[in-house]
Amino acid sequence: MPEEVVQSDSNTVLASIRVSGNEKGFSFYGGTSLQVQIDPAWTITPTDIFIGSDGVNPPAHTFTVSADDVSSAGLLPHAAGIDSGVYIGYDPLSDQWTFLVSNAAVVRLNFVITASSSVTGLEPINFVNADNALADRLFLQHENGFDHVSAAAGVDLPLPCGSVTAADFDNDMDVDLYLVCTTPATNRPNILYENLGDGRFQSVLNAGGAA
View 1 (cartoon, rainbow, N blue to C red):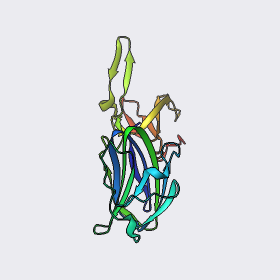
View 2: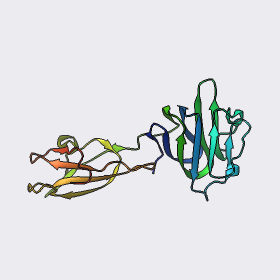
View 3: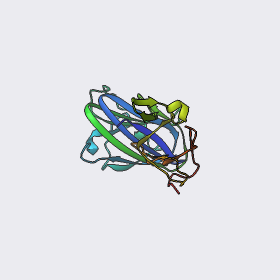
């Protein structure tokens, strides 16, 4: 499963980051004081979490950092993808926080960051596919095989949905499509595609519960 970073509301950042001999992370502006939760606890210890240019270790996997604390400034120098750890730093000149995950092995870490004030400008760092979505594909079966009809049917959008079921949800004798959607950091609304009866489908607004 790929990595993801999202802002679930004005004060909350959620991230799920996987590294393997490289470094990835994210940055944002503002926030002043941040409550940071990093898990799973068995993957990393607080001694592998480094805050500021001096690499201060927090007391636990849930901790607070503040822009007003001089020990939060800067990032501990390290070799990306070789040195293992989470590197957190604040730039007082730009008001920007940076979070980096580096490891020579395969590691996935999850972050929940709750800020005391609004954050802006959330950006992934070194993500290969930041939206984690591939274009949907629809194949219709016939006696000689399958036809790829995604574009013509209108179901070729890049959506983070991993499961689909086909059924007549609106009792009009046409088979509709129900997509179950999620991403590494958060759940996404499920999607109901109504069959229009002419080979095309359209998304039904607010019908993610198939109501």
